[in-house]
Image (cartoon, rainbow, N blue to C red; front, top):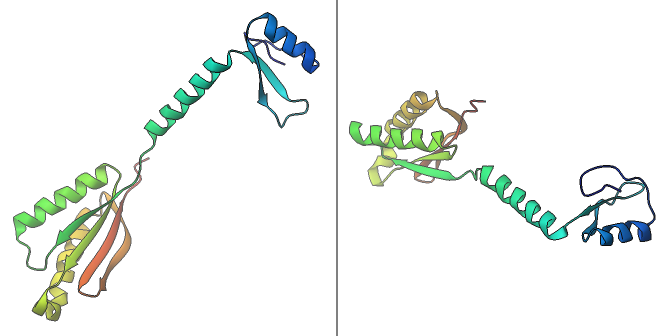
Length: 154
């Protein structure tokens, strides 16, 4: 058993431990039930629950949920439009999100997939300093798709 100030009291019968907790106006809380004998502590249970909840909230704040953002390109994309999309992708990767780069081919553009492939390959080469290619560009129907994830800078 552990006292309210963190000092070890020793192994006590349950009745004696409950009496000591009651005398101090606190609760007897089982901290490690798997131990032999189980470890109990004399504490204010409401305060204990409050601190546990606060610690869980703090842990959730520090987590980052990875989202998949999409950047759509076209085979006939202009240079400025390309740079805007490229900078958006860099921002997404800087925020630790994954980026799906997709290129849709419409109508007769399907006859010139090589042009779109060159645009997407240029994109992959230029963004390689901040991204890892998780999925190489591949054609799925009339859309070419690639997946990028941020490089670990740790």
